[in-house]
Image 1 (cartoon, rainbow, N blue to C red):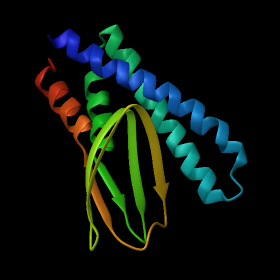
Image 2 (cartoon, rainbow, N blue to C red):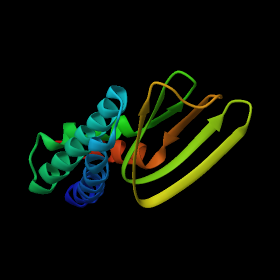
Image 3 (cartoon, rainbow, N blue to C red):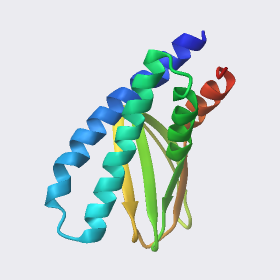
Image 4 (cartoon, helix red, strand yellow):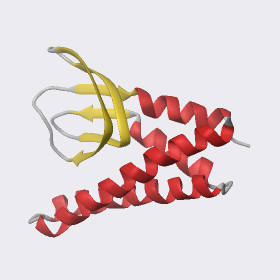
Length: 145
């Protein structure tokens, strides 16, 4: 069962990491501002870490589980505020969020990848969580050696 769970998480990380690296890596050269360039480079690096961790999981390396757990932890929060915005998911997402003063939302996408990191955001505040990342984190936690 442990190998099945590791392979399932690895497939999401490899596919989403590869797709994210191609998507963001192609837009890095288009960024006119240093902050935008930094955001794209950070995103490309995050997708590269997810891709490498997925490959290490498939290979059965012991160090892959803690790295993949960190990758999953980084995908859990979704934050958008006037000062800061952050959201990242690799492979798939099922997210629930609350918009303060405006209700709630739920959405899912498989396959999917997204990267949002900015020093600005919408007028209101939005907080959310990615349930797929939570489940993957706990499954990795329960099946670690």
